[in-house]
Length: 435
Image (cartoon, rainbow, N blue to C red; front, side, top):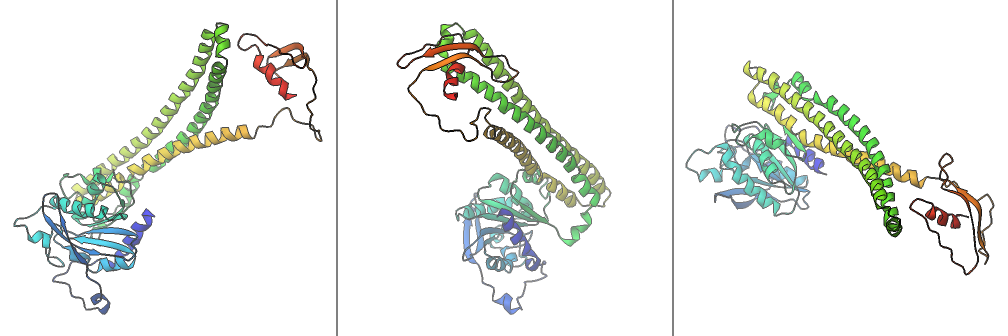
């Protein structure tokens, strides 16, 4: 659903983006003239500045899109785009940021300032729009152009409530690292749509794209190896946990017998052995996971370093702009969160499959002792319980647990079975209902 919102909104760009006009735009098309105007909205930024906006309401909105204009522009940049968003089922709010101008129309917010405003100073205006949008209780999509396309990344990273997608047109490090756009982009976990103008197409470089994605095969191999080893380890952990649970259950149920025969030290040693075995494989599981994640991270940062080295050389030689290199870095930064999520998914999948395999191993187990075909129900007569030279072992190759046991219990009589832990008392009692 999130990705659908972003793609649908981004697809409207093909018929909606306007080139920078040389003068005030004129609407000569009858369809254009019929486009509805937005409802005036007045917001207050955190520093007290009044922010003017236009709200375009859809009848049944799928999401609310916040429209932030480019440098030297105003909210009227979206005067023809916002109605088309409404037709597609999206409400929209376009605002006049203080870092703007008379492109497309009068910027009412910028007009109140008597000095030049730097791009980064428009962030409180954008935050005010986001605060207002969050009160509408709708999914929020941030749409930015030029410098605002960069500011939406720290905006989303700092306050992500309700934000489901970002649309960024020509982002770059326009602010000399304050705020750092690439670092903010790495913290964004929602779908992001990024585009640039044709004039920036010269910055596209297949070699840089290959360098940027070079870590993917390494990460894939690391993930595959981690997933396989984790599954094996989790399966062994489940088996050892069953032994540990059985040991604890036997001691808790037979605690009086253990104390009566002074078997505390023996049972504690048995429990310690089982728990240490589980702990050892738990450590192994954690080590495998961190090694897998570390391998992916190392390959990622190695690819990022190679990208900066190669791209920096192109920038110094004049074959690429700083903005073009920044775009590649931002693209790579956006991949960090998905990589971590994939590692978590592999770990959870390994645990789920091993637990499921262990569960079905028990459910599919066929009893060794079964009724013969056509056996009749056994009636319970009032008779005598008699064992004659009974022996029992849990596995054909195992040591006998019981051997040569004989006794008789008549109706109304009670038989006491006494012995040290592990002597076969429970086994003997469990044999009675088996036959």
